Length: 114
Length: 113
Image (cartoon, rainbow over all chains, first blue to last red; front, top):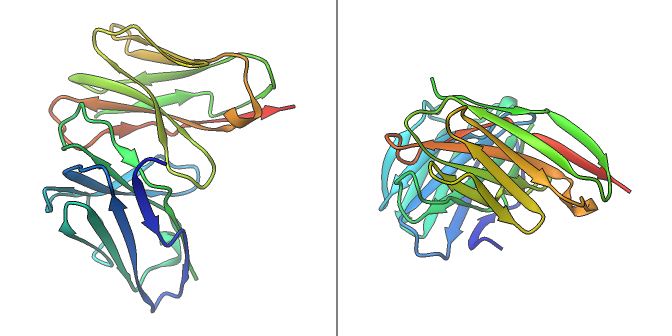
């Protein structure tokens, strides 16, 4: 266990549904991240939060909406997704966002959009 | 543009054999390089991290090397086990790109009995 948990582990949703992914870290870290991992593609950084403030939004469509209520929790709200959004969504945390800090990843949520 | 290229894309070896995975990068200014292991359907787990001044770092049967001059790294796996079957991802960070690392595509390793 890396100290980062994600729920749910699997999610199937229709294109008109609204759902949320949850991430929680138990490491006392100040930075949290959302990544998308599609089949046979490298990890794509979506959002970066530092001390609950969004510091990076990597040209992600507005149908993905992040929320960071405190430094331990990170959400990804989903609405009107497309089938191509089906992927493994990974959450990570690090002590802070400086380059030398290791990122600890959660197990991911496998999302399927029908 | 910062890039990380890994080779081979996939590799199949027999249990007990050794193998070496390659990572070439163009990330600058270089800060550190990490190798992650990602089991199918799980998140990546860090194996090693190396900074500019480090040439070799070991973690059990995993040994990573770094040549900062040629911007190349390798991950050597000794006496492979079935549980080594996974994707191995090379990740490089730059000094001026806080929070944004460059990920390679990964090498998928399959160890067969």
